[in-house]
Length: 221
Image (cartoon, rainbow, N blue to C red; front, side, top):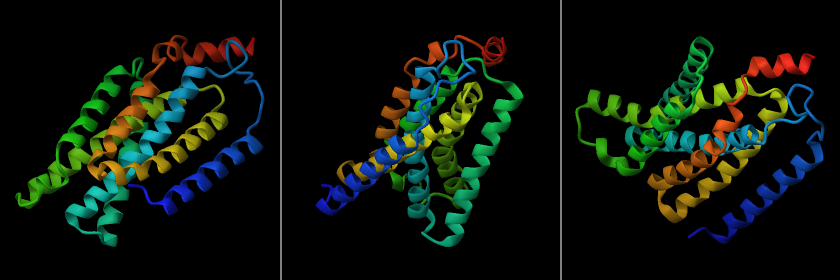
């Protein structure tokens, strides 16, 4: 169950987040798009990418803490690995400029499914090297795929400040969704992340239909 105290905290945090969004959201039309406003499909993707990433990041921290101990060394290594995955995802996007995101979505959903199927204690009792390598591949693979999807989606937006705000709003929803671990168990938080990422993939073809450079060229005219 989710305790009443936690439910109250969720309502307070969620309500405060919604209030701040309505108070500070700039209601303007982007001058850098074909129809005067940011693509709804792209905004939807960025929102749910933020929600899903918050879940897989938290799951990575907790899983590694359960396997190797909740120490400052373990936490430092985990956050270093997270930032390294994000850095590599950005480099990959800049270098190769993916034209289609469905292969990365496929890899992400497969990795999250494996995280759901494999119990947290699966690597216990194994050789130390295999334990470290296997758990890192399992835990950090979704972060790499999600990072590439986000970096390419953010590259396509014509209004980056607004897009980043939408992504942060999604992260708030993802943070509140972490309480679902009290109902499902922490291993199955990945299922909620899968739902968020499937929702982010809706309308993926529409937001990829017009190249980013072409949108900018049209807006300059």
